[in-house]
Amino acid sequence: MFIQKLKVENWKNFRKGEVNLSRRLFLIGPNASGKSNFLDIFRFLREISLDTGGGFKQAIETRNGVSAIRCLFARQKPDISIEVEIKDDDDSVWIYQLSFGQNQNRNPIIKSEIVKYNGKTLLDRPDAEDKKDIARLSQTSLEQLTANKEFRPIANFLQNINYQHLIPQVVRDSKGFSPTSVNNDPFGRDFLHRVERTSLKFRDSRLKKIESVLQIAVPQLKELKVSRDNSGVPHLEGIFEHWRPHAGKQYESQFSDGTLRLFGLLWSLFEGDGMLLMEEPELSLHKEVVRQLPTMIEKINRTRKIRRQIIISTFSEEMLDNQGIGGEEVIRLEPSPDGTKLVSPLDSEEEMDQLKNGLTIADVVLPKSSPKDIQGLLFSL
Image (cartoon, rainbow, N blue to C red):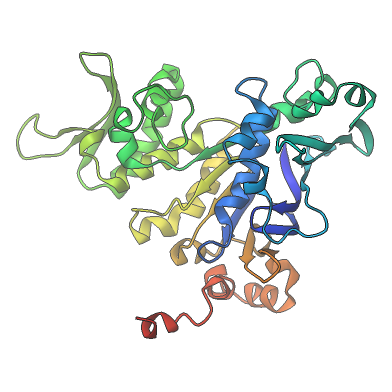
């Protein structure tokens, strides 16, 4: 399964937008244009489909309420709407649409929830039961096992969306950032526990593949493994070549930011089967390593039994200079007086001609994402 089309209205930066999505997608745009907010659409869909953890209500609360989510450019239609078109492995098409707002008490309320399968409507809310009990509209049908039987495949698909943005300082000192345990934390508070809990067969296989990459990118790395200390805490352990015998062992606390980020990026590509959201994976990495990331991501994805959909936000010229990135794999975020626009190179005959003639996304599209009057930065000081 993968999401092949997104429609959004009044979501944060985006007053209105519709865009096709590919299985691998690069998201580019200037600062504060909405790249993180775009990725958050899919994180939100994941949260409202979970049958544990609060679902719709919790997803709204963690984003500080409907008013904080609603686009500042919203006018006549204040409700927030998200619609995704999901293509199944057998070419069947699901459509999930959710519109929501808030009631007079500023509590979030579902205005519309629709599910279609190959054109047939399976769900259309509010229904008769909702009208009898308005409190039902505080939950999506996605998050209710008793209600989602007919469309559970898309509920399961959305639940498996995975956002990863590993922060090396968090991995090194997870308790310093959160004294209590956190499950599936995208910033790395439980990262080493997840690695250590992976079944031995898969863990060793992944570590060997990651080790072969890190041995090229990280000088003197000889071996990579996971171990536990005397108190039972898991550690990432690297053995480095050194002139003194047994002096080359290092734990993650001694790893560079780049080493931890590259390890986390590669592990994320192997971990899970659902959509993967990656935010600026080039951070802390050498530019020559960054150049190889698109090819590396695609190569790993093609070796999997289930090919994942991967959405990557980036500023990196080195990454976007990769000849293997097609125009259909890019969305440019363009701020405007009417909210951020979602722009595809496919919409521009000129851009597509330039790409066909051998120029790269870095040549053709990336310059259009830079702030206007960038030279003015020098004269504004």
